[in-house]
Amino acid sequence: MTRRQMLTLISMASVNFSSMICYSILGPFFPTEAVKKGASQTVVGLIFGCYALCNLIGSLIMGRYIVQIGAKFMLVTGLFVSSCCTILFGLLDRVPGGPAFITLCFLVRSLDAVGFAAAMTSSFAIVAKTFPNNVATVLGSLEIFTGLGLIMGPPVGAWFYQSFGYEVPFMLLGCLLLIMIPVNICILPTIVADPSKDSFFRLLTNVKVVLICYTIFTLSAGLGFLDATLSLFAIETFDVLPSSVGLIMVGLSLPYCLSSPLIGYITDKYPVSVTRKWFLVTGALTTAVGFCLLGPVPFLHIRSQLWLLVFMLGVIGFSLSMTAIPTFPEIITCAYDQGYEEGLSTLGMVSGLFGAVWSSGMFYGPTVGGLITQHLNFEWAAAVQGGLACLAVSNCSSARRQTDENTPLLNE
Image 1 (spheres, rainbow, N blue to C red):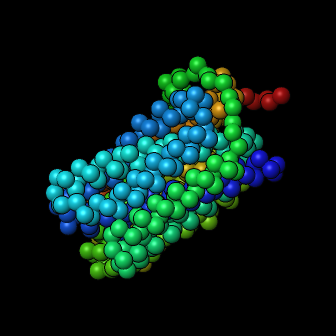
Image 2: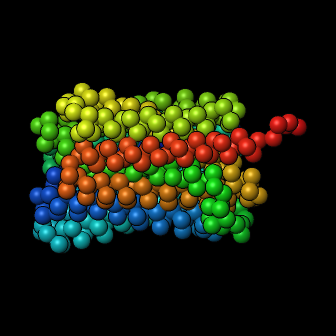
Image 3: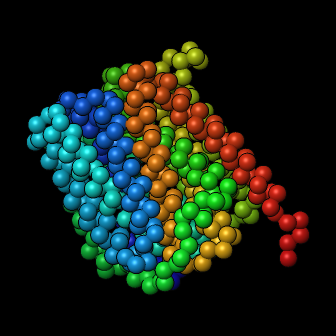
């Protein structure tokens, strides 16, 4: 790699790690604290969901205007906003319970989501611009640091929460995010590009892109559902401590972290027609099975067991890497096939579209999942997520057939 590529890789790794560890600390203990403050399971799901909704809007806007704003400036500003909001979220335990607490939770999480959208949209675009021939490999390698953040966030947050109270985990990790700002200012190269006249809407006229977007939606919906409901289910069903919930969540993050580099390498190394389509189909099918056995679904008459829960989380984590890693480079390929210009503007739009679809799933998952959990139970809510993944299997198969039909018999 060149010096510029190495510095970019270091910068993006720091962004992925610090952002994800701050994002993931809420899962083990915040739902319990929110319930103590007067929030229902549905409201807790909405608090998680509003983050995704604002992330969706922010991703579309940031992706469209990344060239005008500047990729480096967008990333650094997003980190600053997200770090301040993380620190502010740690002060919410001082707010009286009821409407005041719930309102401030929505406000701070929404602002945090906009900052996160700016950082992640620019991050994806910068990686694709700097490594045009190895997008999946680099993204898969960077997912090691995403996975480390997701792995360390729940147990570290839960341990600090049990040892020092609600405020300390947010203060420490918010300050960690602040430290990343001068680091990225110093080492991240500036990328200059011309704006493009292309739009998101023309990209969405491609049926294959729409089908891939639905697959992305099902993945993020499942993760959002687990963020909002898994901790309460584990505590009530298995009588575990919040720190143990953090360790249970490692069962999801660790397989994803370890398998992503390999999936990314294979995706770039071998022909698209042989790898990406089969990763998408197999990953979606495995995800569906994992969610159906997570509870497990009541009609199977299998008793809920802790070992089965952790094992199925590992299956879902591995299938997530199989399905998620190939989607971003595949949408880029579709955009170029449609005649989009090869540059930062197109990469920003693809990154914004990816972030928006991912965020829509992160809104749906905790909101609808929390509602189903409150009125039925966790087992049926997980089964619904498995049904969404089953539908993604048929969609991926349709995309595969479309690719095969559009592939010429003779290639020059």
